[in-house]
Amino acid sequence: MYHNKHINTVNDTPYPRLNIGDYIIGFKQTERQKRGRIFNTNHEGEIMNIKELLNKSQQKVDYVSSNLDKGYIFYFICSGCRRRVKYLYEHDPFDSPLCRVCCKLGYKPYTEKSQKLSKIFRKPILSPDDKYMIIKLAGITRDDVPTV
Image: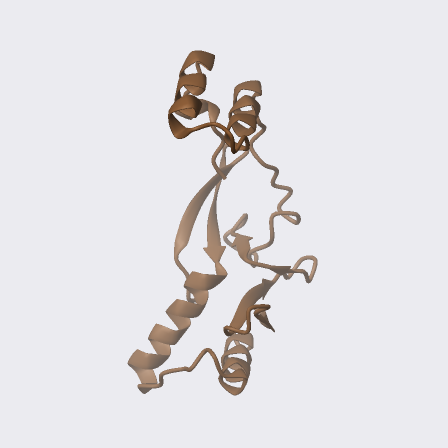
């Protein structure tokens, strides 16, 4: 399987995460090394060839055209719910990777401080210096800001 594994700490449970972008890049690099083939990802015929070759493997993929008319966007097809997703999580080393919904993964809950921080950054009338002072006075630290 062509992928880079990223550790995801959603709900304090580490699952290796598969990114569709890394998956496609890995596939294209492997094809270039093995067969000397370079794919033009702006041409639909080439995209269909990539999809067909990838769908012969265990993990199914799909694509849609970009709404900016600048190529195509690939998605994994979750083997659990058949939805298109950009990320899959290896919840079990013996099963195929599943999406966030099928793995029952939630998001790290927001704290009251992080909600205040979000409100501060949405105010366009404040200068960066004003925002910094408000954050400092509120006692908000990097630990209060959720990362996904």
